[in-house]
Length: 261
Image (cartoon, rainbow, N blue to C red):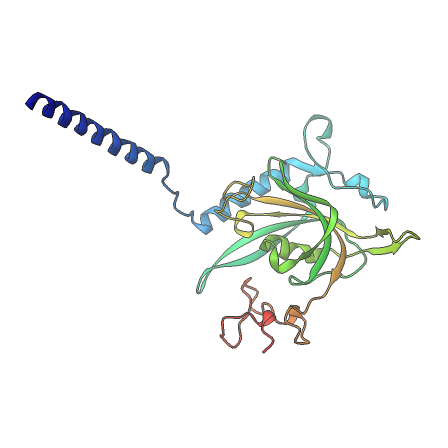
């Protein structure tokens, strides 16, 4: 009987040690990476973006005519394409202040390519836009796209998209006898943004955490928006501090552009 008791205790001890080791191993495997520093990541992203822009070009020669069917295509500068103008020489760089905490900001650059300006109106950062788009990583993997135009409320998209699209203008449209619309002279461009103006440390779908991203955009229509229906355009109520944070003048926890008071 004593021998059986010893065997039981021995086996029980082995089981406990094995169980604890498994739990410890799982905990180590599932450790969450602490958030990266915004400033340090902005510097890394800027270098990655400028490396891409310096080694790639777009099909700018195809945009020399007014063909509305042309789409932006990126390619590497190498061999037969070594004489092409790199994107870094064709984009506009804009610095966006990102508020990290009260009184603390980090500069984040975005790079805007205007392949075709468009001849209509430019949206504000809170308007609604009728666009087709393609989202890419720097390895040119497409993580999202909509070649059929859709309406975007710009308050619902990542800040880099929202801040970059006003560089473009809408176009013209007509409707044929079958009520099928066609567009011409619309804005076409691309926005290259660091992760701090995209999804930063949050992996989203097929976008890894801390990924700089690119959006190609065709801007067809712009609709000025009054989100709260108070007769004042949201563009006049959204962000007078230019820090990307919606204003809340009366401190009631509701942004001015959503607050009919």
